[in-house]
Structure formats: C-alpha cells, structure tokens
Image (tube, rainbow, N blue to C red; front, side, top):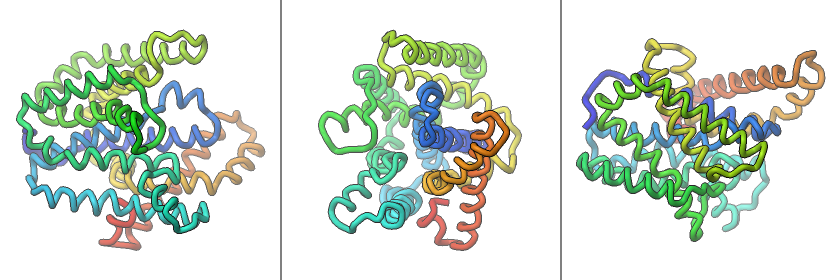
Length: 327
C-alpha cells in the first residue's frame, strides 16, 4: 500500500496540467485547430484517468473507508455536479424537452462533447473499492490483463454508450490508464527512481510516437492504428510529466488553483467557450496579430474567466459548492 505522507503536491500539480490539456483540447477542437489536437491533445482524458486511479488508492491508503462511504463521496463530488451541469446545459443552452430522450442524453453524457467521461468513469468507480483491496500480485495481474486488452482492442469509440461492441472497446482502451494510477501509487517508491533515470528515454519515445502520428496524418502510412499510437504517446508523456511535476516547489498559486478547481473547470469551460465565440471572432478579425497568437490570448483570457467564475461560485455556494460545482 502507499506510504502515508504529507499533501501530495506533485500529483496535485499533475491534475492542474491535466485540466489545462483537456480544456485546451476542447478549445482547439471547437475552433478548427484539428491538426494540433490530433497530434498532441487527443484523448487527454487519459491524464485524468491516471490521476483518478492514483487518488483512489492513495486516499484509501491514508483514510480507509467502507464501500458505502466511497460511493457516497463519488455521488457528491462527481455525479451530482455532472447532473447539475448536464441538466442546465440541456435546458438553458439546447432548449431540450424534458422527455426520455433528454434523460438518456443526460445519463450518457451526450449533451456536450466532454460529458461522456463521467458516465464512463462511473463504471470504473463501481469496481474501485475492490481494486483498492487487491493484494499487490492480483493488482499487477489486473493491470497486465488491461494492458493486453489495450493492445488487442486498440480502438477508442467517441463518447459513452451502452452498445456492443463499443462499450467493450471503450473500457478495453481506457481501463489500463486507470489501473496504471493504482499501480503507480502502490509501487511509487520503486517506480519514481526508474522514471527519473529514464525520463529522457520516455521523452524520446513520446517524440517518436508523435512523429509517427504526424506521418499518418501526412502520408496515410499505417504502422498501427491512430488510437493505439495516441494511447502510447500518453503513457510516455505521463512518465515525463510525473518527473517534471515532482521538481516543482509547493504552493505555486496558479497550479494550486487550477488543480483545486479542476472539476469545476471541466464542467464549466465548454459553455463559456461557446458563449464567447462571437467575441473571439471579432477579436481575431481586429487584432493586428498572427492568428495563432491572437487565439492563444483568447484561450488564456477565457480560461481565466472560467477559473475566476469557479472561485466566485465556490465562495457564493459555500458548503454546497461541492455537489453543485465539483469544487
């Protein structure tokens, strides 16, 4: 089991990096920068999965809880804000009718691109108390089984669904990253030195896989499926990022706030980006700057708006902010 230790700043910062990658991926996708998304940011939810697996094991190691308590925490901290934002988005933004089709869209997270992740990860949360209690050998066996499934079914469906074989493919593709977090937490004292010693090799492998992805996009040359390459890229980037965040000092204000409000940012950013779309177009047309620089400034400004709004709403709702905002 993970050793008891003080607040885990490195994983806290990793969560900040993860939410930035996810928010940036959605901004780039929304406004047509698909080449950048497909080369670097696609499936950035993998970072969140790794962190979720790690934290499940880490928290259980520090503060063991019963199965019922675990589920209640996930209901309060994850499911409730997901339902709140889903319903608000459907009713306010999409003018959805309150019928069975709307209920189904809410439960499957299909009202917006990013909401699929919550119903998907809920399936993993259901089995997480059992995973936390596996001995080391059985946990490693489960990880190897998930890794095998990742290579056997290297296909990632878009969104969450309960349909054969898409659901099988979805869990076969992503579960290994969730279990990687468990394994890293259990064996961190042994893994960290290996990561630090081999960080440049992992960086080189990430660059190589990224180059192969670019070659696929440019030439159509198929060494492997795109989804497999993207998953491998994220594996190697996780190794590099873990070393990077471990070298940062504690109490970096911006990273701390990004991590603390990561779920609120996740739920809120999409609507903000959509609502400010017309202002973005005006700014890009008027600004005497290269489009990439103007778009970068718009992204930073809108991200700041989302973060400040999340902080203000948390203060407004007080103790009710967790089930409403996820923060």
